[in-house]
Length: 297
Image (cartoon, rainbow, N blue to C red):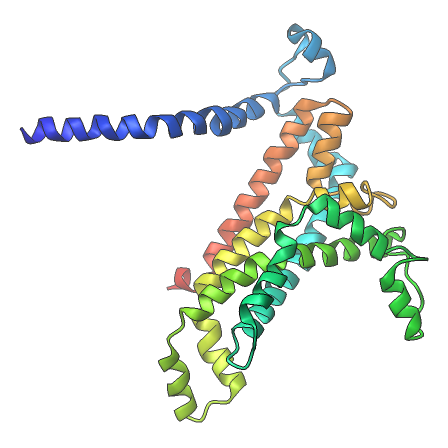
């Protein structure tokens, strides 16, 4: 009887899981496998008209990536965005989370809504607004700089300032999401730890270093991983604000993949770029997991 009951439970479980598994297979696993197959071919616009023209090229696309200067430039831009924007976004999120969680803060809920608002706004819309803010003649940012006697900057027209401008915009757009995660992490820290530290004479900085930061270690790991993954997927910001310019200084790996796949119709090469990026994300995630305090033990 028990065996029959377990078999009935298993059939019921599969019946409930089958729709979800089917959708995951069709819309997630299937496209990945198709993309992997494409990366070993020279699939292009001619193959769309006649699939018989597709040739299997093996690892040729991956070998081409190693010598492609355009990919090297896109990789350098992406790594600049990840290494500059990632830590800046996490630190901004932590700082704002501590401010809105402070006992001295008033209207906490209002400020949390205000700081989270950019996350739920349309990226394209706010990117256009920021383009006007960055305008060298009519933008509010340069107006503020010149008021203090500083020279105006052509934020999106100067190759040296275009990527920092996009980093600043991306941090403003996304820090609210991590802020809420840090707020939840701060609320999970027992108040007794802070009281014990005060009794021992610990200063505010010491309580932050020896109580807050260690208690937030799991939160830092989660925020670090999801932020890094998001940073590697940089696309909409440069696509809307600069189109990869000036002088290709804001072309990211994803934007290059889009150009190769949907502008030049080199679908096989674009698929290879996608899987190289996937490998980079997996390696970055593995490094962060290995560097986490729990892994050292």
